[in-house]
Length: 281
Ligand SMILES: Nc1ncnc2c1ncn2[C@@H]1O[C@H](COP(=O)(O)OP(=O)(O)O)[C@@H](O)[C@H]1O
Ligand SMILES: [Mg+2]
Figure (tube, rainbow, N blue to C red):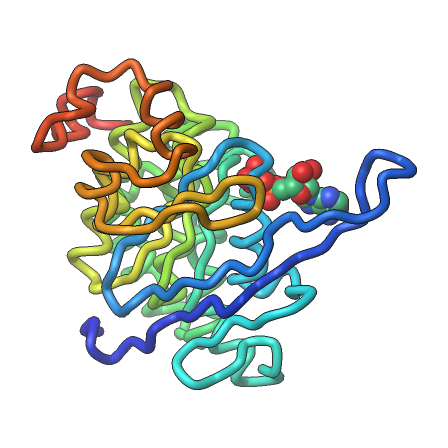
């Protein structure tokens, strides 16, 4: 698939209102009037502190939650109006990688089964071909030789390996956009860079779009070319990654940057993620 065959994803004035979890506090906007677009092949990062509404937006984009107002469009199509085959197709086009690789995998299923499911469900691939494709997918995400992983259960894998299985499963659906919601933040520090490097590589190799969600502004520079900064449910800043990091316009972005103890913060080039950690296995 080439990037040019992928439609843009548009988040159009999305607001999500929840009843407050604090009794007697009424309702509040988890995100408010958020608009942005992910153009084909782009890697966009959505950065904000805990509670700023990042996961709410991820769930709305992937169709798990519905916006209270506003809409998501993929190409010309309003995602909220999709039904039947078109909805299935969207669910395969837009894949989510969650924060918690422990919770994301069924403890009773083997790697082969989990990575194979989207091949059956979405692509209707015959079992005979699926085995080869599963092997290929595992090797793509750095689980090689694949034969060593096919029969493994989640508890037999490290956190980094589990997140690679989650990514292989997402890729199996042949997605056009991957929404990765803090995909590395629950992993050991030594494994984080490996997972981020993998997402960056997949984006390039497969012509995918990537929405990388993080509370860690510094990691965004490695993964992405555009940064959106979310503060209390509102987008307060957006722009080219380098510009946002070097010349932040919003006071909140400045605050986030000041909180990072990083000697490269004002520098030109990002240190390659892979120098900061091992190979992520
Ligand atoms: N289902 C829900 N009901 C009520 N409040 C929620 C619900 N989901 C999230 N929230 C609240 O919405 C806000 C944003 O949450 P979330 O999108 O998970 O933020 P983030 O991912 O940036 O940490 C938080 O205050 C959270 O407690
Ligand atoms: Mg979250």
